[in-house]
Length: 332
Image (cartoon, rainbow, N blue to C red; front, side, top):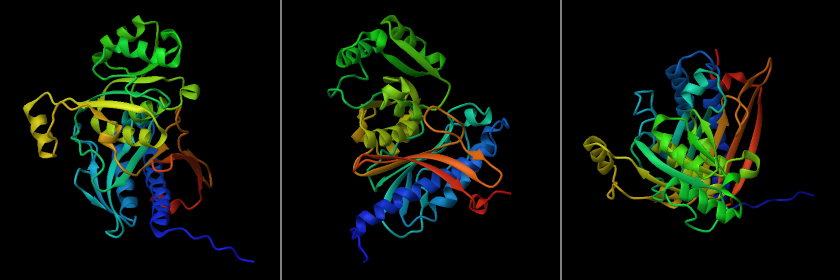
């Protein structure tokens, strides 16, 4: 007796794309992982970019890169406006960070990942590669429980009230940068704890969605705008709140933003302003971290760990891959 399972064509395509973007981040992660600890950030980034581009161009999509990487530090780029895919299938927006945590990879430190998001055409924020103010919390809180324009200490107290705990039970994740000294002092003034990270604020924002396991309740600080859009796509899939504002503090940055269609230069963006509609998000570990395990090179197997999420269903999958065909990674 045979059983036929009928899946509407549009859903079948979307499910295929869910697995396809896993392949994209796996390829990028493995290529970057070969250069872990070699001290060459640009070489690791270049390897991840090249692998990600090769794999993206195999997917049956008409893709446009709306969030690229590397503009600020002149690294190799999947540039904004670049067309990717096989030029067949749906029109989609692509956001990429082929190697988030280039320094982490170069120093073989925890937390480097390869990541990307894919969404319906015209639904991802087309943001310039500038800095962005960010605040994020996980799901389950009243709307506007935190406010980007409120003082950090006030946001900690608001969150503590919403959780029905003392502020000392709250942990905030902050990038370890001199510019964040006042934020760190303000958070600690409430009795809350601060966890500092050297890089990797996409993973940092995602950590807020599962405080019971990550120990992170809130993310506060300034980081890259591309990472902000990627993090928003992830939070769209798993729930949570996020507010951001582009830092356009020079004429050149303001002009660049306006050319990209941004009319309100002081706008506070919520999650759905940055990632609307149905979107997919994937990240593969490059080095071991609290979010994902890094790539493992065994004698006959390459092991990867990837998280892939979809906003329309809220599904989160952790995929542990064992790869026996090394040729697909273009390994020497």
